[in-house]
Image (cartoon, rainbow, N blue to C red):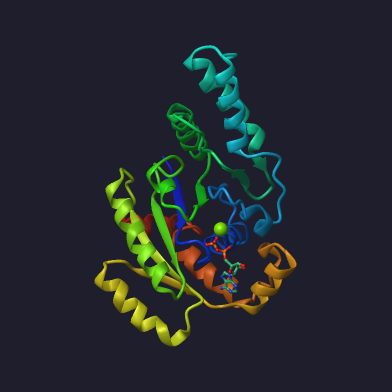
Length: 269
Ligand SMILES: Nc1ncnc2c1ncn2[C@@H]1O[C@H](COP(=O)(O)OP(=O)(O)O)[C@@H](O)[C@H]1O
Ligand SMILES: [Mg+2]
């Protein structure tokens, strides 16, 4: 059986998770023909714009509808709920030529809707089995990490910008990832917008924490401009520094080839 790689991008708010996710997506679709599911797991839902796509609805909206039906008592037993949610989730799946896309939206309900959330986890896990790669743009809140979408995750990418808060959040995310039952094969760090002269120091600090620094994304004026104009990052020039940096990171993460992926997972022997 072929390995399924699930990469989750996490980190404090504003550090560059969505930017990293969008540029990783870009690298995969430009360099490979691998089947890819991209999931925006952040309720803020910035990723569709960064990728230049429109979404019809979100998983959260569909789940809210289901909750309403449950409250109104217009649904049958457990099986019916699972079937309905599983069937309707496809309404939110955007099937593109180069990748498929799913926006989670807001999935938390009032009161105890644990079983709806549990159903969601199962459905997303099932869905990702249909793809060679799944890429998740996580929310800044850490709660997502302990639940739902990234249960069978292989790789966790923690994005950092040059701030103490981002660094502390990174360590918390690392600790949480260990506490909860997520079997990450690898947890790596990507530094975003650091000055080149800060790299050595960052590397040393992370080494003491046993966290490998997997790459650095430079501050990129072209990216800022695209962001200001609301242009998708998929349209950035391929020689833009951030695009180039993330391509390297994608290769190291095993996103661009089966061989690199097996190497990353330590299965290349
Ligand atoms: N390397 C970079 N160069 C220039 N602007 C960047 C860079 N990384 C992120 N940004 C900008 O910083 C803001 C926050 O980035 P974003 O990826 O949305 O963070 P997050 O998803 O972690 O909240 C965005 O406006 C984005 O365009
Ligand atoms: Mg974001």
